[in-house]
Length: 194
Image (tube, rainbow, N blue to C red; front, top):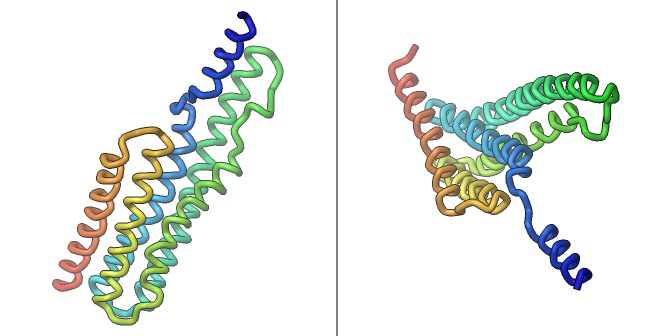
């Protein structure tokens, strides 16, 4: 009888996951990839609004990818290192010992953030890289980014056990809005000159 009860308890503990514990790394990965996707695509759309040359779009997208990945990595490093310092101080106050295995890794967090940003940023770059004709290139970028936005929204929802349609729609419309605003404002400024 006791053995059956122990097996039931073990079964419950292995099947019940606390999805809130995934939230921090999940948020960072999805945010990084989505940020890389949306900011690079928006930058390329903005440059494409005034300069129809494929080289200009690709160079602006590449520069945006490198700058964004570096920015995300440095921001994550500083943030996680601050958390690291706080946790070390707390451990020293409580027990006088620092348990290094329980501490976050600033370098690992920085690398993961840069990688996630770059993974998102590569989508619009690849979509535009092989298309010479301007209008087809814009459509290719929007189409590729649309698919990636839906996938990122769905992935975030699936990993967090949240509603997939609502999450995908939110990510999709946010990305479309960013690209449209960037394209429209850049086009307007480009037409009227600065």
